[in-house]
Length: 209
Image (cartoon, rainbow, N blue to C red):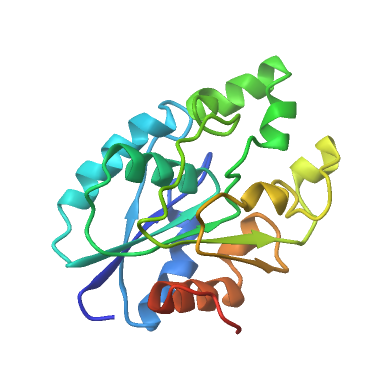
């Protein structure tokens, strides 16, 4: 869409390359896309939100949307809480645990798991995420393909995407919620996810695809 830019925010252990296919699909729908990369283990979500605020300040588009995968959605929530005076735009989260993560809780019970999670658990994957005001529209997409290490080792409650349960993807004041039959990582590869993102960024509702 002319004058509309989407900032893509990746999840834990990633660097943004994982969101390339989703970016290309959104570009075909008419948006400009840019990728925000951040130290997902080395800094807290709040610290990374500060970096994201500086990153977004350099984008001249009059409308800036955000699409976050997993932990990226938590970083976006900190951004809008700590820096609420934002340009017009909507937010879509894919597979984001907006509530304390069952998988992260189990993983953090092991020394190696705590090292793997790093600072992502501080006001993040283990909870204590700032509330969503609802001033900007937020739509949450959950996966329902129960395939992933989280499901294998943690016995996640159903339905889930192998890492995050569908229930964890809900939050107060969200504008809309939907599911896609995809795994946690597969949400980034799914054509349906991209189409639903486009619907929500355009209309404020997911609709059907």
